[in-house]
Amino acid sequence: MKKWLIILLVLSSGCNPKVVSYVNEKAKFKQFETYRLVTTKSESKNVTPENTQIFDLIKENIHEQMKRRGYEVSNISPDLTLRYEVTSNTRVDINSNNQINPYYYQSFSITTRTIYESILLLELFDTNNKLVWQGSYDLRQEKKEKRIVKAIERGVGYIFTTYPYRALSAEQDESLKMIEK
Picture 1 (cartoon, rainbow, N blue to C red):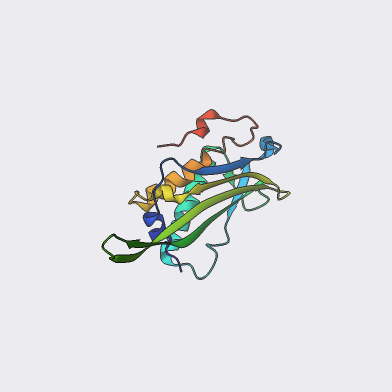
Picture 2: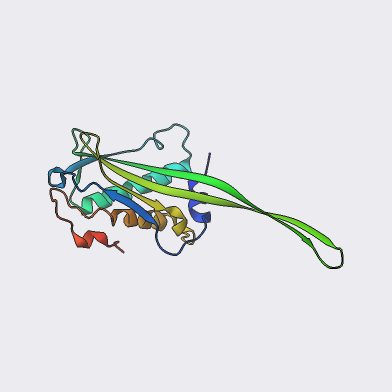
C-alpha cells in the first residue's frame, strides 16, 4: 500500500500551482445550497492509519471551503454531491551513459530515480448526476512542505479558487478566487 504521507513529502518540485478545472456554465448555481461528501478510496478496509489521517484532513478542508461559500452538509437529498479522490503513480526514470574517451577507456553508467506523482481531484455533481465543477491539483507542488496539514490545506485551497460560487447564487464572487492564508 502506498504511503500518502511519503508521496506528498517526496514529490518532485514545480514553480506555480498546477490546477486544472472545469466549470459547467449551464449549471443552476442559484438552486444549490446543500451537499454531501463522498469518496471511494477512504471507504476501503485496506486503508493505513497514515492514509486515514490524510483523507480526514482532505475532508476537513473541503468542508471548510464549502462552508466559506455558504453551503451546508446534508446526507438527505443534497443538491450536490462532492466527490474527492487522490490518485498516485510511481515511475522510475532510467538514464544510461556510455562514453568512450580518446584513450580507449570505456565508461558505462546507469542512474535511476524514483518519481512520485499524486493528484487531488474534486468533482461536484448535481442531482441529475451532471458534472457542475471539477478541479484537480498536482500535489508535486507540496514537495518542500514539511507539515502535511499545511500541504493539504494549500492543495484544497488552490482547487477551490476555481469554484467562485456561493450557495444560492449564480454570480461569481471574486473574493473566492483567492486562497485564504
